[in-house]
Length: 128
Image (tube, rainbow, N blue to C red; front, side, top):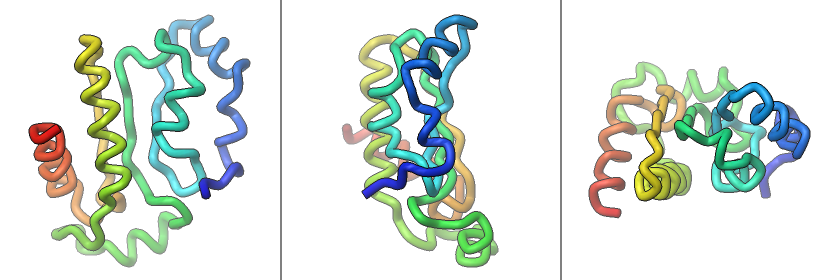
């Protein structure tokens, strides 16, 4: 189950309205205490998802420090995060089908090596 602490409590209709009011875009993020990106997209109106912006940072329950220690020296995949990779691929594919640009930023602490995570994500997108 996803945590409802940290910034997750900000995903409200008021937040969505504030984004729409100023023409801002939500940054969907995979962070230790946020709901899944698939849950986030349900909270955000389409106008605040163009372009689709995703930051893949940490898996659920992980701390920045623990992930940094586990993943260093960031030269290999330490542990595949297939669920989040598939969720990102699903959202990017959906955005593409609606001609919406996608920007995905990947941190080394997501799986251990950002360039390799990006390569795996690209393969997921090619297959999907």
